[in-house]
Image (cartoon, rainbow, N blue to C red; front, side, top):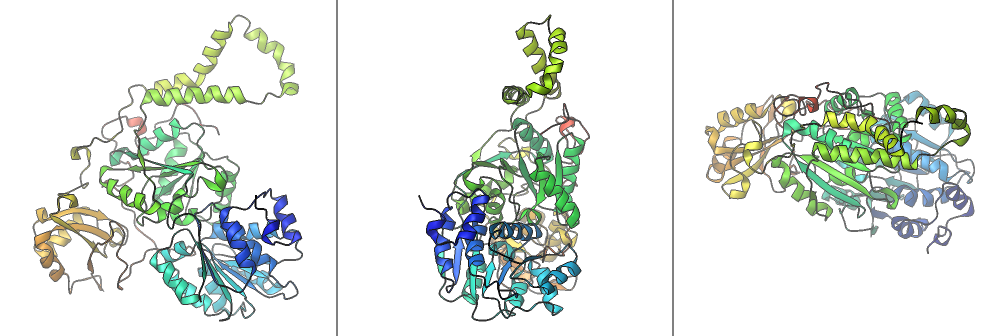
Length: 599
């Protein structure tokens, strides 16, 4: 078995990681550390989240510091505040016995004055989000002339968030002769280009298949009607009594609303998104790490860098616009060799995106059925039995009460006692789920809601899918978009098929024979002073990446662009329609679950 000692790490570092409980290196650590300890070659490491990438670059970086030089020698760039703090904390733990190593975290949402003060005192490693670091560079408050190592962690996500220009500006302030290490979970063309631009003959290491998912994660999807997504979410949570998970949403507004509704319905939940202050975010994360929360409802940006042990489930309330983001989401579970489950709650029109994700992660999804009321009650009952069976009895503390307890139960048989105890919570679940409706969407298209699956599908070969750089942030809904397309092209509505409205862009289908008319009509069209672009969609639901006109959405975690929220099913809130079905399970309906969940 390979050991950390055999990799060439120094005794003080070995002592630090031993204190942390590290026994043997992960595959990425085992293969990357010897290469990086050489210190003179650029490096590209591809591995899924949860595989130990921080230690893979952090341990070699620490070993090669010259502590006599009290200036930045290592620069680590990462996409979010949470990941920045996580890396900083890990490096401080790794270097516990190394000496007086100064590591400073630089990120938005916290006092820049304090960060400037720490940098002025002297620092060996700067861990930073691009936005805040660029602000500090512009103030002339940091000098990177002694930087020998630049690390780009979660490079794919930084580029997805629009940090390309910031990274260019930051790296231009570092010496040309530095060594660059790039770590990423996926390898899209953007990451390939940045590696080519900043690296010379890099050593490339891939652990697992490129862009593939963690082998320890099972992937499931549930097909429901859009108005019943929230009810399905609660069913899934109730069906997994021991769940400790993260629910992913597409927008900040949605994450806050779902979290508030779960709290109101008695679940131990909270939201994590970019509109929270750093103090609020820290408080939420502290509760989640301490397992005081059963589920955390988060956006993609906020959840980057969440490194919490034993997350059992990731639930995609909305699938991400960029298919590759699914890899990052699912990677929050199944970490450090443990198993996990990634769940997607979708409408029937999103099954095509499931197939796309399967191709990216190279794993098959299992189509699951939303459990009925009986199944949920059964699972909760035996979850309670399991808890009772495994509870630790404090003999010393409970002994003074045993006489009175025995007197109270003296007239009951063992069987009666078990029945009554189990019924305390089982009865409430039984009542709550009595006559609960079937939430699984039928295979026919009639199960959809207005605005879903309008027009023929692409599979019939009669329609072409197009991209347009207008979306919900431009105050469009699906009806508005249909009218806009018809007005500009002169086409009738039946010539336009399905419309997928996104935040800053959209997709729509048009009959093949009308394609020339559409492209010609939009050659010189402007909307609010900017050119409207129409492009062929070559890659499913992923946005075309060619050309300018770039509405890229949020530019940085430090100050994201405001985005409007548009629901999937055409309703004003996720699952907002309360017509039909069990009203107690409607989103925001105020219907209470059978008891206050404890975890």
